Image (tube, rainbow, N blue to C red):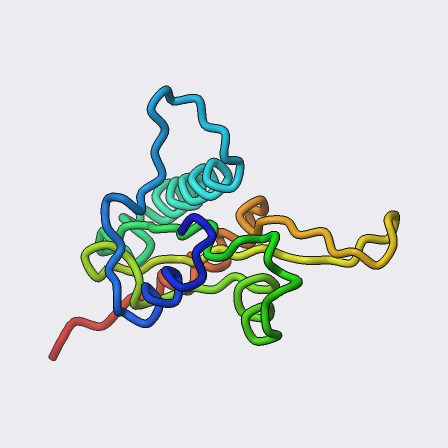
Length: 150
């Protein structure tokens, strides 16, 4: 999402659909964005685990693709955002069942903030995608099997 809160909210509120321009890419395959790399790798490991351990295809066993939205907000803006935005996008990660390309599900990765103990009262903001357990946890929310339509 390139740190655009307005674009992120537009996607979350179904005013905008994710498209090909939202897909992370790198022309020389020398990836320099660790948030995107972590999200991609950990989502892949999670998919592999589901497939190898349980024989599942996709997070819902119905070929549901895995989408991970990174950079929903600009981390440097944490001090200029209202509390509800900080609570949702900076101190949280969540699964969005209505986001994604082709109406498919997506996972939104945010950043975690913690008080810095060595440098005073500042806040150290790190991406949630840097933690395999967080990525897997949020993807698990999208993996519930859905009943066929009656």
